[in-house]
Length: 176
Image (cartoon, rainbow, N blue to C red):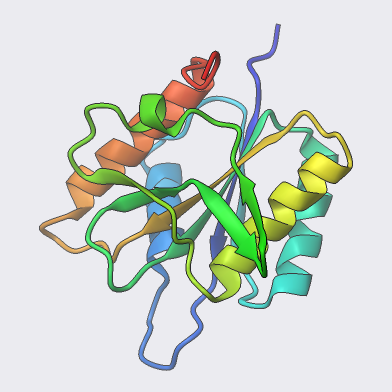
């Protein structure tokens, strides 16, 4: 039997002073070091605009039918990986169905956040969760904010992210 699949997404750069986007740097590093779980699909460098990004994510979900979609975005002002609990649109709040406490347990460079921001990250997260719930798809969604990857933080951030992905692949989100 084929292991359950995972779709990982990243964004392209969006500000003039950005050379790269840390979310894409993380996925690129894991891809080149063969640090991704089996049956992992990458959708890299999404446009930093909700409608076209959502259309690409939806198409990839329909094509691959992953058990999980993990959308990643850069959080320039944060210092740790942040697993986002919810996406917000107006007075509507949608929560991930994943057990974030289990996914992040014991990870020194990972936190759970209730603030996916006020930009495209939150908008994409909310839109993906809304679409998955409304269409009754079995895919579970998560958004992860990735801090800048520096020489000092890269190893720890990559290690924590790999652990989160491994826990997903082993079903550590079940029963939450």
